Image (cartoon, rainbow, N blue to C red; front, side, top):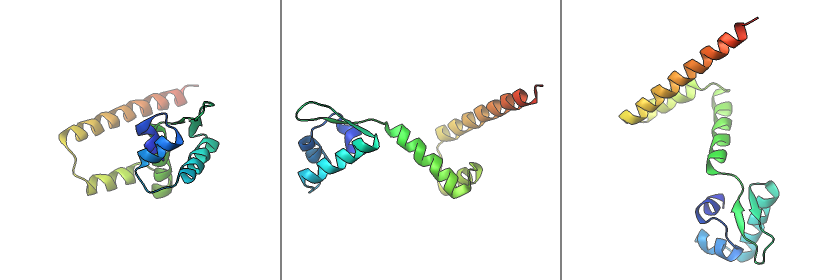
Length: 120
């Protein structure tokens, strides 16, 4: 449902029903959209007909999912998860370059934090 809202933007219930492209009833779409509003991940306008929009971005959801994955799969440690991904997936030269840049930035950040902790 959120993916449809990210794609379609502000939509009425009928527009959402059509955008989903599934054999799903109008009231089912309405119920699901209203639940997303109650959870704070979607918004509803006061207009008639009301328009629904995503209140969070795909990046926000993705970051939360990844944080949960790291916590559950590798007890908060990043290295085992990265090692698994590197063993299972072929990387392009650009991806390797990007990963090296991320590691270099993490090293700089770690060094800065270490210096800040060691100050009296």
